[in-house]
Amino acid sequence: MNAHALIMLVLSMPAAAAAATAVERWPLPASAAASQPSLGKGPDGTLNLSWIERRGDGHRLRMARYRDGRWLPATTIAEGGNWFVNWADFPSSTQLPDGTLWAHNLVKSADGTYAYDVVLYRSKDGGKTWSKPVTVNDDGTATEHGFATLWPWSRGELAIAWLDGRQTAGSTAHAGHDGAQGVDLGKAMTLRAAVFDGAGRKTREWPLDSSTCDCCQTDSALTDDGPIVVYRDRDAREIRDIHSTRFAGGRWQTPKPVATDGWVMPACPVNGPAVAAAGRQVWAAWYTAAGGVPSVRLAYSNDAGAGFSKTLTFKRGDALQGRVDLSADTKGAWLLWTEERDRQTLWLQRLDGALQADRPPVRVATLAGRGRATGFARMQQVDGALYVVWTDVVAGKPALRGARIPAAH
Image (tube, rainbow, N blue to C red):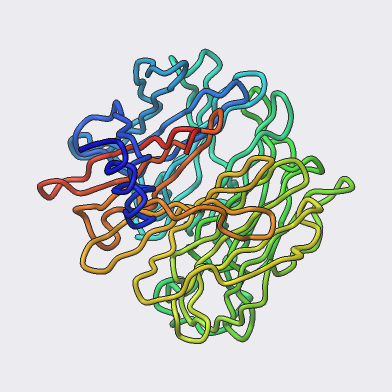
């Protein structure tokens, strides 16, 4: 084939197919039967991958760090036989400016199905050794605590926000999954936040919202004005739209809607929002089925999340699973989402500050797994290149997969 024919062939390729050639395989160091990946980024550009592995009659939480194009040896953060392991409420980690690593998971507090606590671990030697567990919530109730998001509060302090079920104690139904509890918001899930110092001591704690969706992921981002936390709210009419709250002026601001979808949902959709920031720019993304049509929606703020000036419906259709993630830089943001028709697929789209796509979408992967078994894909951006991790199912067992999209694309 001559050069002219080759050029014409490339130009005649469908946009999505051409874009797919930019995806490179990114081998991960996880062993077999690994799942629930989380991908964090340190201030020095190190990528911190954590995941769950089966261990006999229990589980272990593992971490590996990717720096200068290579993986450092994987280490075990913690292991146990009394953990709450769930496809949607996965562990995560963050790296502070002083180099300290923090990670979290969920540990059972009683025999009930939905009785577990959020537990933290920290490492001051790059992940080689980890501290004993520190329980985040100290309410002492045998209720749900989870769906946490972690971020640096200062050079050596950690902040964490989580869904807290202390108000649900004594309830006879788990409203997050079956809606049987109705609209008794006196027993609703709440959103709380806390700060831990370098010794693992809780130094501050706040209630952020008195009624939230029970089992949707929370997310956070650091803007030039301070942190912003996004989550799915719940009101007395069972409207479950996305809300945000910021720490500004020395206090957490009153939560407010990112957008008013008006999605009436009597049970938790288990599909939380994502947020990313660069300077004072903030992008938010989320799944909704308002009006009966599955959709992924977007919002943009140029004032550190004080207000979202632009919102739009990015994509609609029955194939949309949501499960979104975001990564931002000063020129725009990348959106990651999941679809499922005959096969499950992961997709990326680049967006500018006007929420407009400035290039064709990229199909990251076509998965063998289906439904909830594949969990939630995560991503981070380093030097313009994107790194994506997800769970697939191979021969009936979970397996971690990774992809890299070079900066040139």
